[in-house]
Length: 119
Image 1: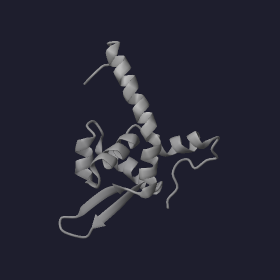
Image 2: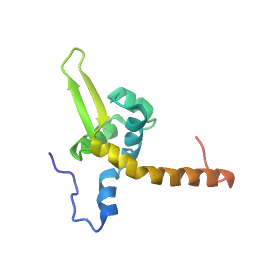
Image 3: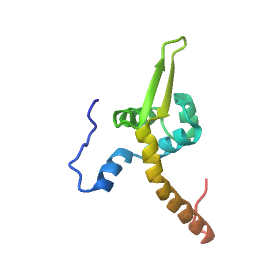
């Protein structure tokens, strides 16, 4: 397994967890794969408006190195590659679920106060 930029030493568990999910798109990639299951690269890109191809490739590689995402290459013409969550990736999503609930409550509060900017 290739080494990422950082592999400790970690100060605490949150530090170790944040090292794995740091990056603007990683939590959204986790969400996309959890919500929709196995996805091809183009499906992931369409499901994450605004992500560049370069950034998506980089994050998927890092997430594969960290054992969160499985990359399956099918030897066919045209070539097909699919991404799915590993057991480790699904367990991380479960750990992030309370954070997502907190974020939903925050969005609702900001919307009620007229502070939420929507697309």
